Image (cartoon, rainbow, N blue to C red):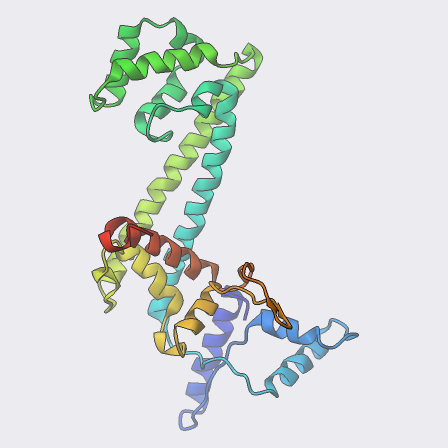
Length: 303
């Protein structure tokens, strides 16, 4: 199978077999394309064509190592579309934030290197980036800058004068951008920030729909401190029927959270690398859920 490309064919075959042969027990199996490709590498000189590929698949089946039979899991498939789209968007947001920070160095190098705000992408920090320049901040009266920070921060700063003074110091020590570059850099920053904000709003939209769908799925994951409906959905969507896995080792392997072994004679390496295989979506949600548990459960905070 190759993700979405095999979905329609597999479900079509399942429905047709049930319609044409209702009294015959049939089963659909979806092979892992990577495993078949690696199996083919055992033959040194085979060409690449449909006839040979079909023969390799048949030869692979001869060994009897079939995966679990495909089950009708539309609810998991539907949920998976949402959680994987969320995965894609969160990674795009992170990539755009990195790009934006690189652009910020051109405009305000001091703010890029030592931002006094707890969140570079918070409302006040973004207002400083979009509405002010280092030259303006350096020349602006302290009282006016304090008023600006209080307005954008909705009076939440305990010591706005200290932040204002530090901003003025950063502005004085920052590189000056040539006027020819100023407008293009400002526009670039504005576009990237708008893109990030739009993506974040779409993630919230996905989260709402995920939470709605999760209400109809029996589960106990959300009873664990730190695991909300979104992370629980990511785990459930990728794992599906937990009985597909014989034990937790099988699940860890499926997620790609296993490390290689290097042993020869009496020597065995202590430090080995993680296998570069497995379900990246499940691995992501496992790591995120684990980190959330660590933050919210006092028993795990030490880790």
